[in-house]
Image 1 (cartoon, rainbow, N blue to C red):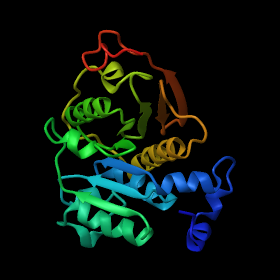
Image 2 (cartoon, one colour):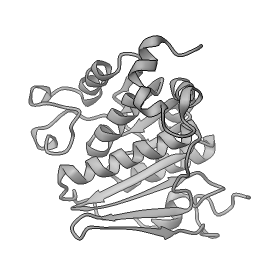
Image 3 (cartoon, one colour):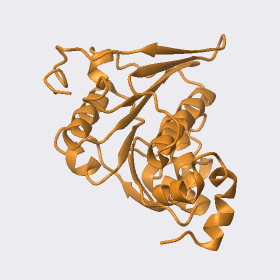
Image 4 (cartoon, rainbow, N blue to C red):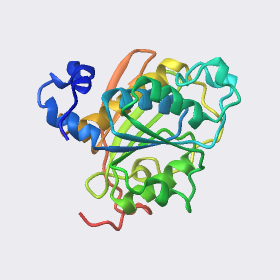
Length: 246
């Protein structure tokens, strides 16, 4: 279906970008994005994916809003404390862009639930806060051939990659071990930067413009500041993807 007059107006400033145009916008409208985690990363990623005009966003998070979330989780306001994150987030995103269908899921990502949660989506955005859940999402997306945009933060430092085995390493190739369960100390600006970059990777992939971070890891050092890109390689002995053929 052709873009409507209000869509042409709403998205005019992005459709004018090289290679985006009406075709790219129509691809966004037809796309479905799974966002795993509605915290600091998920807040920024969801806001910008919705604003760009993605047709359907599934937002998955089992938690409720806490006061300590509000320094970085910009989907929520003080009045949302105590509410289910996905319910509050859905209202905020719907007010931003009523044309985007928001599917709120108050679900925990585990080995049993992950495949059914991710199925039917064009891409997943990993905004989770534990490596265990990230590895589960990694395996589910590999099984379903769904690309994942990974990001993680600590302090003023963030990292980002585009993961789509067998063309790229999987998450476990370059993060082979479980890290501490201690919650990182994070300012809101770091999660905002990295979540926005996750949205950018998703938008580029879905519209077919530019290039992604496939096979590369972006390191953002906010204190210095400095941006570095590292080449990452597949681990042939990786227990998650090492047996996958090219």
